[in-house]
Length: 159
Image (cartoon, rainbow, N blue to C red):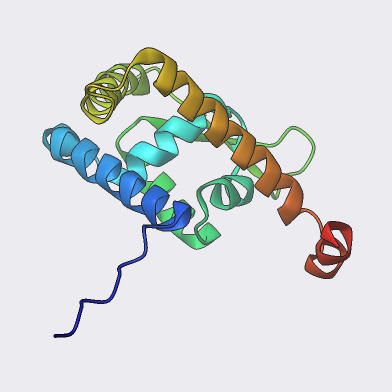
């Protein structure tokens, strides 16, 4: 009789990826009727937090190519929710801003986000939620610092 191989528990990377994927999927299910794609929602959310950001910097934040951000912004601009304004000192650079028309979309987006988070945190007590958020923030801080250090230097630092 042969036994089944023991399946290792999921790693933090796989688990975070799966949870993020499911959060996006559930958000998209709710947001579909509002007429914007997930990428467009993501750009709106980042512009809400970073008014005046340049297109290249926005592309870095959302981890896509600048040309992709350009196409998304073109579409959002044609919908009247985003505008490009010239940089005050460099005519080659455009800064991105939300328009007043974006306000109701952001309200809807936040409501959908809250519903989605409520589903994700169902039956998880508040102290556990807070601990999870603090742990994830610490991981983000650690990885942000590590990514700014060359790999060889980090290996020497860790010993």
